[in-house]
Length: 110
Image (cartoon, rainbow, N blue to C red):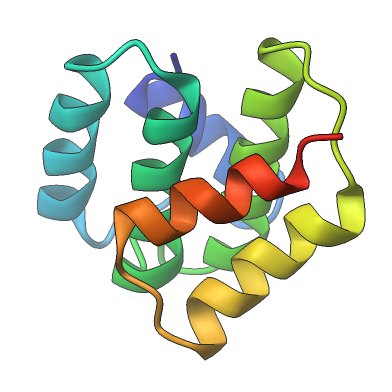
């Protein structure tokens, strides 16, 4: 499970790591801590970062990097194009449903 510090460090790869929506990040971290299911954890984090714009800049890239980190940590093979499409679809289609995001993540597993 990624901590707030981990996510800030990931965002620093793309921008300055400045959190502008701390309440969304804190709420999401509490939810993530309450489940052991990596797909649910990553779904909540990706949704919060991509839709709630947790960081000043680099939210899409940070969401993608976090999702990839979860795939790698779980040792699941994935289709990089499907994973990229998840983040793009969440943003362009304003997908907020955790269940839908979970299904999208499951569909990216090879």
